Image 1 (cartoon, rainbow, N blue to C red):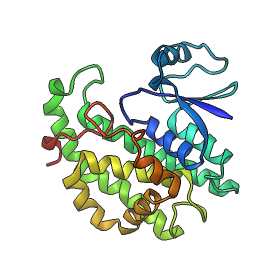
Image 2 (cartoon, rainbow, N blue to C red):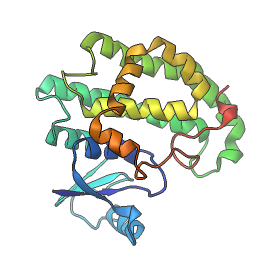
Image 3 (tube, rainbow, N blue to C red):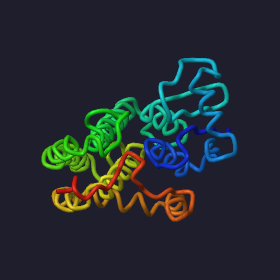
Image 4 (tube, rainbow, N blue to C red):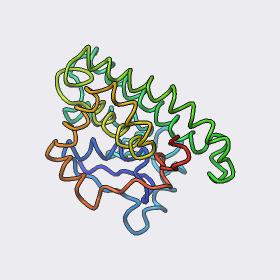
Length: 235
């Protein structure tokens, strides 16, 4: 099957969590909006061109007649289809729990630079962003990373099950994103999470992911995406 991924063409954002699973599973897929006319096709999908539940926002994955939206739902769907999820029910639910928790962290990271409204520019809410980012660095980053670290302490080299799953790929991406946005805060916070950093490094060396991560198809982090580096927000 050739999957169709619909996401914004110029940022990693939430779509990158999906790309990592597609790449590691060696799936055939097209990043639709990076092709001519792709953004118009995205708008058509969001407007209900396909059957099924109307997607709220990208990312959206089309698999034949199936339409799946929401990052954690897409990565679970792909992971369970392509050997990147535990085979037992307890493990599958555990991976979903971790993926959804990481999705919460992604939303909180976004809100550090847009705490007032997504409709306003960062510059128009910079004062509120500075306050929000301070609390995020001080309490939320350690809390979320500590949660992932404790799961690794309980389970071993991976977050759930015995093999790398889509939850581990999500953990890799969140550490990478936060390290870009908050390098100073992450240098401090990750001193208490050696197992999480080791997982990040192992995931980065998986052959298919390494090939992708070092290719031009892996977009660089930038100040239009979810993870943005504003020095004044990093303390």
